[in-house]
Length: 113
Image: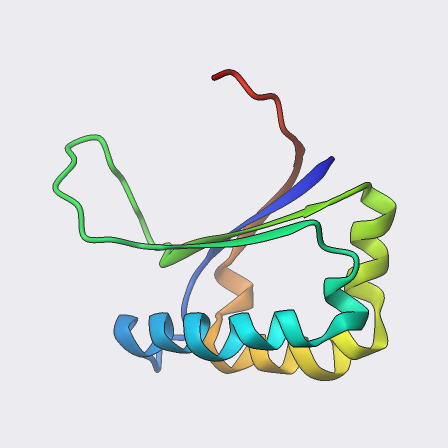
């Protein structure tokens, strides 16, 4: 199983609340509805930044984390190359995410606990 983890940064023109609401209420349902893309995804999780007084928590410039699981790197590449992803999902991402400031990493999970 392969996972892409994306550290998400909102567009500068949006407040955190606007970004958070859009990501949760508009983008998440869109991901589910685009079957040509979502059929490749085994799991999709949004982690929304919470206010925290935890001393070791360093959130930096990130507003949240998106995690998407795939069967393989090939299925990940196929999903993001789907015409419906490029037609519907990518333009939606550009409405609320500063893609140039986001960071992503593709990993294989190693469960410890």
